[in-house]
Every structure is written in C-alpha cells, then in structure tokens.
Amino acid sequence: MAVQLIFCVETNKKADTDSIYISELVNYFYVLNNQIKISKVYMGTKSKYCSKEIIKEIEKKTKAFVIGETKVIYCIDTDEYEKNIEHQTELDNISQFCKENGYDLVWFCHDVEEVFLDNKIPDSQKVQEAGAFRRKKGIQQIPLDKLASSVMRIHTSNIMQILDKYLERK
Image (cartoon, rainbow, N blue to C red; front, side, top):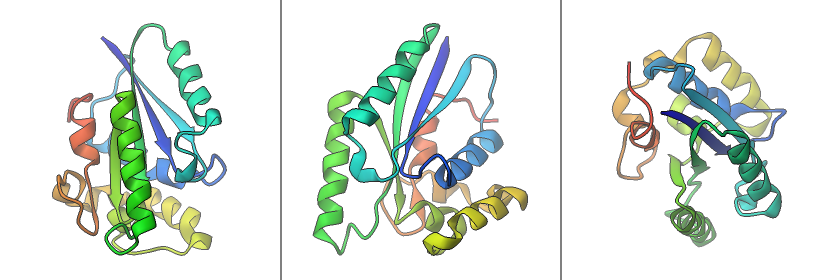
C-alpha cells in the first residue's frame, strides 16, 4: 500500500537545512519506490507546531494524497530540555500534541546538527554545513546507534526507530 510521510521540520523553505539531513538519511538507509511519497511542512520555528497555518498545510497535503495512508512526523530539536524548563515544557507540549493527533515525534538531542555533525553550528553557517554534509556524503560516517536511540542523550535521535515503522531498510 502507498504511504505518504509528511515531515514537519523546524527550518524554513529557503534554508531547508533539517530536510537535507533527513533526506540524506532516508535515501541512504531505506528502500524508496513509487509507493512512497515524502512531503515536507516547513514550520519556520517549532513554536508554530500547532498553528492554524501548519495544521492547514498538513490537511492540504493529506487530502491531496488519495492513494494510500498518510503519516505525519514532527522533527523537533530538544534544545537544552534538561537544563531549561521552558524548553522542557515546549517539548512536552509538542509530544502531547503528537500523541493526541496520532503523529510521530522524531527528536534530535540537542539539535539536528549535533546529531549529524557532532557539534553546534551557528545559525549563519547552517545552510553551508548542511550542503557540505550532502556533498561529502556525511551520512555514511554516522553510527546507526546515534540515529536509533530510545533515550534522549546528546548527539542522538530516534529518527530510525520512527522510520522503521513505515519504510524498509536497504
């Protein structure tokens, strides 16, 4: 059966940084065919996770995909959740929102760059670093255990645990 995966990402359409890491991972580790459609919703910031604009965009993409099932996957940086109560509260709220709506939550501890590049990247360099990651095939250097964690620890994500539910590994 056909499936559409809608990735809701924190980046904006112009920068598209988070999507580069995610698409590199999907293309490298998973079998893709014409029964799988990958879509993106750009939130711009995770604080817009439940805004009318984002909900409307998810609904629009879901309705347009009439040949199968749609799965919504929120991809969220945890930020400094263990030190900052505001970050923890926001993460808890997003997690609850995902549960209530039947969406999956992919987390990157502390952010997508820490997971894929092993360090924090200044905002001004994120586009450049994501492009370099793609060009240098950086995905081939990442240990799988970093991408399939069940525990939030620095430099880890649960992304492969979520994707394994819907995609077949190569």
